[in-house]
Image 1 (cartoon, rainbow, N blue to C red):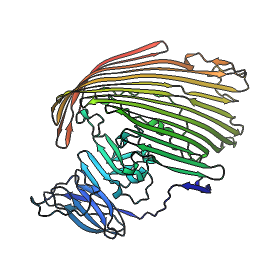
Image 2: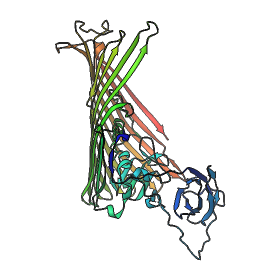
Image 3: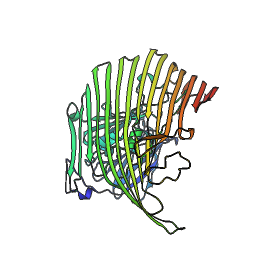
Image 4: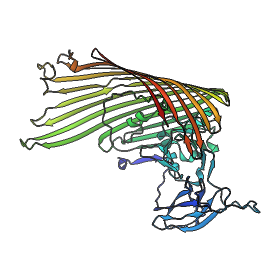
Length: 606
């Protein structure tokens, strides 16, 4: 549809060619044949004198550089305590391997010469990228910059990955940017606003808990802005209009200061570009996690949805989208931080498909046309508050609201004697509210307490309606056959209440070991109701009251647990053995029948 646009206005537009890339890999070792971890490896174009590629060795000393074929490079390898090694490499059309052996630096240096400012620095668990060293000036979004940084990738779902681990949080100047999703950040933050990208490994939002829990898979990104982008409104606009009333408008506005920040993102178009899909909505966690993922039971509450067909722009006749999102942070005092966001998305989709079927037995031919009209409204809102009067106390509260309004109408027009015309309606308005309250208190350097509680309320109401002139199951369903049309409906309602709560006590035994005592509970309660009914020609309702056509279920799960774990770090290994005592109770009430199970279990883990 883009080809139909006669006029498109962009604040910036770039067209560039991409040269073929090859990989230069190898191992960096010391004189004892041991791999050197976190060594810097850079490739400088000998013609332009510019930095072409950069890499950091992993724990085994392996490195990887992406280079453009047909150019000559000076490759330099450096690490504190070793002499800098360098060699000349000419990139051909094939990947290459080059191993390097580093020699220890003499104990006394007569002269130090700085030949190139390293674009990456490593400070403990933090990797800092100077983005100016990795951009050519043609990058438009954060996504374009991140794809140039070694060790960082954007996966097929638009999420950021660092060394194979998914980034769970993106911050700008230390402030959350739509917590719970990284796709909005990579697709909307302007590339020309970036100064540095900080990768925070082993990330923990609570300073008191760092090192006590297992944070190996926790990775966050913090974006540092250029000085001209602070205390100043900045943004960009993309807009266009063309024949057939095609349009697009994509304004974005940002403001950052030490005290507060505001981010506004909008997108309106009917070109088939969906900025926020239903899959994005389902995956948007809001930063909430299962607090009982270790020690307690990870009880997943059952969900009931309609399974609406996902809109595909290559199959749709028309897709109309409207998207708006706002994110804020505000620090009224030095001890209190407030933040939150609101997201609204509308997608209207019209689809049409045709099917021709030939039945071999009768030689009948069926021509069927299916028209689908789908509208989806998605809404999210989050509010967070953090109170931290001193280094020994922190109180967090979060509330996340998710609600959607989905409607799909499908009409099947059949030209044959085999089937009749069918009309289907699917609609639902599910609602979920998730609240989280956490308290962390450090009594002294040896004794730390943590209290965490989470409540989930979920209300789902999928509804299905099918209207047709013929009904093949009249002998199974007690329908009224004296009707012009068969209007059969099924309604469901699933209400979930789930509480997770636990108290942790940590006894710090040393810089690399601690004991953890946990007392907690998980309480899950679900009500499920469903019924099938017929709407008659006069709009009256005929309920099907037999047990086969309705259900009323109450399902309860209870877990009380007490756990003890010991954590110790030995070299590159972290051991965390423990044992947890559980008292389970499961109770199911259905059709006047009660089934209850109790189980006491002692479960070790490592």
